[in-house]
Image (cartoon, rainbow, N blue to C red; front, top):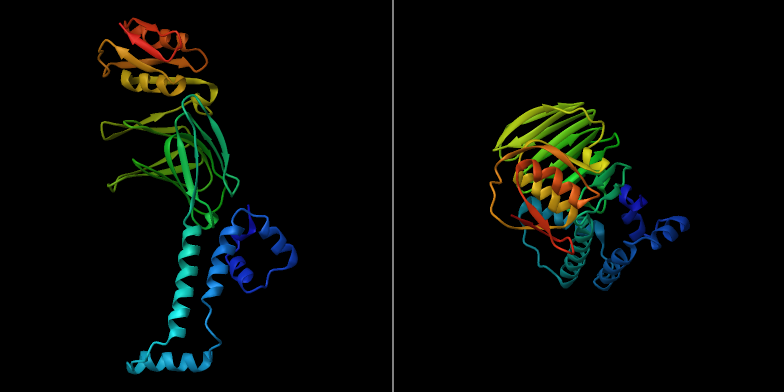
Length: 301
């Protein structure tokens, strides 16, 4: 992790010219240096002539205390302009974010600035602040990911269904268009349902599934998420959810005969063979199918 992200005095000392030669050399090699340097350079053009700071402070206090109106000089406006340039520039950099995404059939391992690890499943995205992240350990998630969080301050994962708060633990979150699952593998996590006062605390092997706006509590036996072992497992889940997962893992579309997607499926499929995956999911449901030559379309019959 870059030092300027964890040391809040770093940038101020750089502007004041108080960094050591070693710190300055290291800073110039960072990705953020060009941005900070550009802001500082622009600000230099707006610097006002030297001002008697003691006299200015006294006048300011008098104005606040007695409500005296002071004429705003060009020097004041130049100072304000310089301050605005610096504040807006630094604000823009400090609020910038970094994101990681995966496509269909892809997985991605991500290490956060504090050493916490995230494994992204297919068609997923995480995002977090680029600077001073250690002071506000928050990430947003779309899709599915497995987390191994290092101990430290609060760690929050924001999703469309609610926030998950942890200290140091291992857990998996699945947040799709119509699906939300949270599985705790180690430690403890808290789920605060969005737009509600409802919350749930999960400990090891606890699992919750959001089904038709209701939270269902389950027990899980696996030590890591099944998808990390290359398999998707379902227990009485709508067929729509099963087909969506096949689509994510194999980048295929389903066409043809309309089928009842609300029927419940219990079973699994592997992520390394499309034909076997279809056979293990559609055949037990009595659904016939054919696959296009390029294996991008599954025709339901």
